Amino acid sequence: MLETSINDAYQFAFSIQDTEIKLFIVIRLMGRTGVCPDQLKPDTLKDVLQWCVEVLKQREFIDVLLPWLSKIISVTNRQQMELNQLSTVVELLLQLLEEFEGRRGLDTKQRQEVLAIY
Image (cartoon, rainbow, N blue to C red; front, side, top):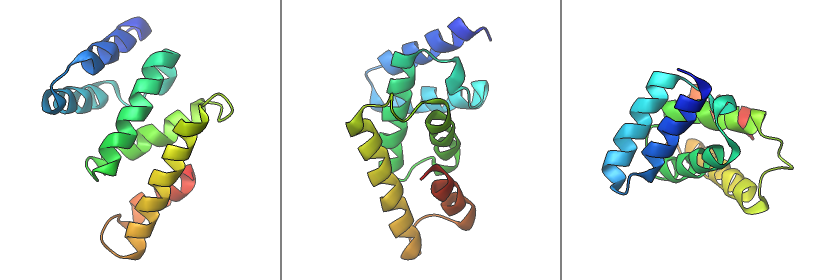
């Protein structure tokens, strides 16, 4: 896929209003494109980050979304991220880690990924 067509595909997916259809389309798109936040425009990347956080808050698709979150954080200069975005990500990571301590949530690999992002 060309970079612009990848970005366009994500923009289209995020324009879908139905939450369940959007979830299906975006997860499918992520599987098709692989982890590629470096190929997305800043506005699209912001949408992906926000969406990943919202879905992870529901503890869904953790194995799919943690690599995306990790890569987004690594390709995005933390100083470029809005403060509320960064605090939301940190809050989510702490919640995920706390759940691991209670043995309700993450497996060991997922916990290591969260720690690497944090």
